[in-house]
Length: 259
Image (cartoon, rainbow, N blue to C red; front, side, top):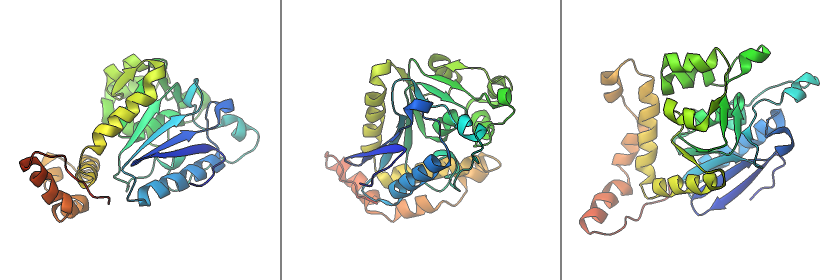
């Protein structure tokens, strides 16, 4: 495993755990951190032995406070790789699941990282916001596009146009957080979700994510249902497509293949 300056990466079986590691600035990210995280998720995407990733923040205060505005204010140029903020927010072609374990503040780009993930598990101390309008910016790393699609236009506008802070409990009520747990349990809860995902065929999981994500871009349910998806075609030709029904019939745990 490579050594990283701005994050930590751990592999636990088929699971990759990525920890943004700039706790002195609430895990806010500057260009060097963004490019480093792009490499981390490039490696995860390319490794057939890794099925699911969890991303979290170092320390007890923050998941990520977003862009490192002090770096920008000091004259640093804020830029992101082609895959977006944290190497995730514009990564539209990776269909392996990613879970956000939000262990504190998730603001601006930090919230955009979280809602770019497939599942969000939040500490009861977590706080979410897209406060960019309060500092003359806009949530351009996908926040203004993802949030309306995830919770509806009016609720999203209530956050986007005011920059207001939302507790973990309200975030779950609004619909963009899957589960809220006591602060000390957030990583265990994220691993529990990951374990449930890893019980499933990785081919099926990726085909399902691909169809869900690309189907949202279609004009309507009929177009989405009739769309052609490479992941579904690959699933139909895979060993998992035979192994799943066979294991069910034989009343045993399926032996899914690495892909």
